Image 1 (cartoon, rainbow, N blue to C red):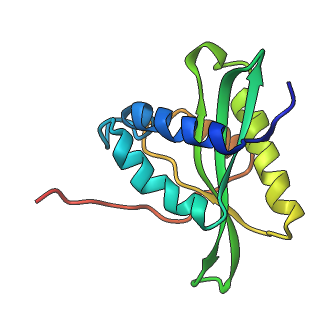
Image 2: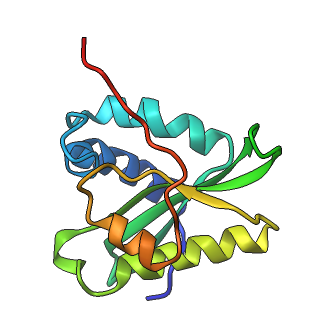
Length: 145
C-alpha cells in the first residue's frame, strides 16, 4: 500500500505502541512507558506534527513522525524527523528509507529547506540517514551524576 498520513485512531494507536518500543528506539536510553510516550510525542502532534504510515492488509508495517519547528540558530523553519519505526518483520525491505524519503518530500512541499533528525548512538538507522545525505551537526553529551 502507499505511504499515507495516519488518521486520528491510527495516531493514538501509534502513540501507544511507541510507549512499548521506547527502549529499542532509544538504544536503551529510555525505558518502555506508554504514558511517557504520550507525554513526549502528543504535544508535538498538537503543534502540527503527524505520522506517515505504511500498512498492508490493514496491518501497520511502520511509521515516521514529522514536524516543523523554528530553528533559532539559523533563524528559519526547519523540518524534523522525530520518530521512525519499522516492525522487525519488515526491516531490511527498504521501508525505513521509503518512509524517510516520503517525509522529506512532504517537508520539501511545505517549503522547508533543512531537515534534522536525532539518532541515538548505536541505532542502525544512522546508516540510512547518512545514505540519504544527512550530516552530523552537533553532539549531545551527558554526564551522569
